[in-house]
Image (cartoon, rainbow over all chains, first blue to last red; front, side):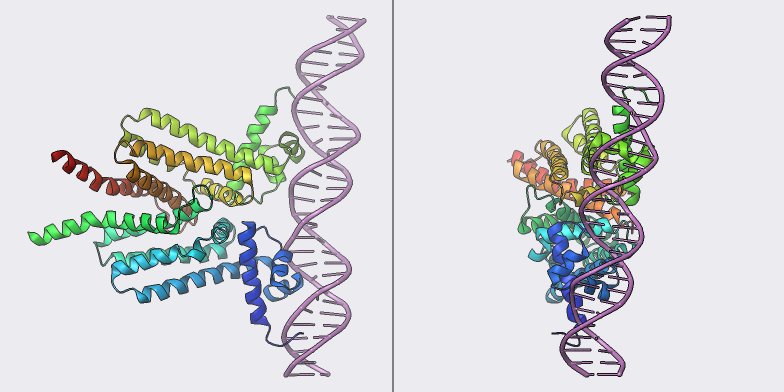
Length: 203
Length: 203
DNA sequence: TATTTTTGATTGACTGATCAATCAACAAAA
DNA sequence: TTTTGTTGATTGATCAGTCAATCAAAAATA
């Protein structure tokens, strides 16, 4: 029942299918056939709309990061103080759907792919920068710039590290525990600084 | 010039070659031909000694983790106090050869592979557990068990996270900065605990 | 010591399977 | 009749894995 205006529908179906298949498979060595089958179309159609497998995968990363970004924007809007915004960023990073094993597996596969695909790498770099700069902007409201930079770097690393450790599925850490570990890190590094600031004021 | 007793020599050459090729390529989708060529033998010989590509890759992970383990044992032996031992563990994790882009790329590829290969996953789980338990053992000498567990988890995540962020090669962090971030984390989380312990003693 | 036999090392050539990509053809809507 | 959506069939390339054959050292035998 071919109708007109199917292109956006098919593109979305294929990108979503790719995400699912990659997540299940835990790797980018999935076939166009598998993806197309999951999307309910023929492999030829996938090529028709995306031109190549590589391009489909790139669009898949892009869409995934876009969704993540939307979540962050929403949550940041709801948060009032800088400290609340920091918590919002952390919360989104460990959102249930983000932290699901298949999502983590896909995430990891994309990181590996970034070693070869310049375009995939570019998207991940943008994500990494955004995470860092979101953290940094709010930390700067709470402590001196240099400290903020250090803490942002550390927090970003901790978030990514909790992901990669999760991917092994030995001793899985709960969402709450992951959030707690990251919050602890920020609190522990901010504590002595605000103490110092208070002393400074007292003088 | 075929001589007897070549087996161990060839096995080592192939495993080393695999590590190099994977690192350069940034992915496990390397051909047996490439690996064999790098090792200076025919592809058929690689199959002769390892039976399959999968097995060669598994041996490669194994050998890599073995080397890392040896470094840790050596450094731990040289360190005296628990705090020094913690620093030794961190130092080894960011050793120059471990932190080289190709090594990190290979590392990442193995993590991705672990999603599919149960045996690869097993090795990485062993590594993760070892890192955690090395940290934990020494932290327990410095703070209560529950705190030690939290801190060990966080430090391990931070180390792995610094690796994965390094893999993107945007804003690379130096070895020293990586060590400093991890040390800072441990210091910041231990500080309030030893303070509390001191107060406890005073009472 | 001279010879034959066995054994381990090694490869070139081949096979079979997989898969991305192409294309010609058809169906329905405009 | 043109345009858009769709697919089955096919192609060409890539690769893991196999195999039979070769070669030289070592061991056994004469």
